[in-house]
Image (cartoon, rainbow, N blue to C red; front, side, top):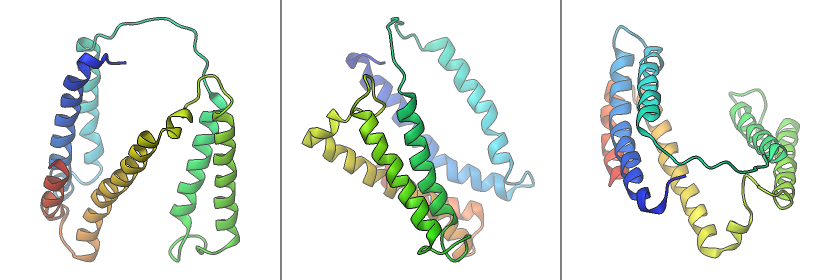
Length: 192
């Protein structure tokens, strides 16, 4: 969507927003949760921010519009959504605290179903004219390694961001605001 000459500027905008959000989010969220407003207000306070962001995008973002014939990969999007959702449901409900054990027939059914759906996704994506996930990009070694590295970094960064706050509160007994403060070194490392 963005021409190559403009991509650096837009990457800077997105990087600045990400830096402010990752540093300020846990702190502000913890402060709101500890306040008399309660945890639900962490969601309510985001609504005006989203409205302002949509307004600013409508006013300032000017992209050239070119009409062309497109074909939407409906089957690929359904298979991708179903396969990934089945894995997420399995991970959410499995284990001792869940509805069934890790090694059970439910696990076999869900993981097996997800594998079948994702295998069908690969088959569909190799045949459609405009795939959601173009398989030809994976054939190039540099691109494939970049994707693997991005997934690994994303899992580590978002996993630690999500679960470290819970660890500080549940296992160590800190308040939400204190947990946000304790996460600042990790956030500084992410930004660096």
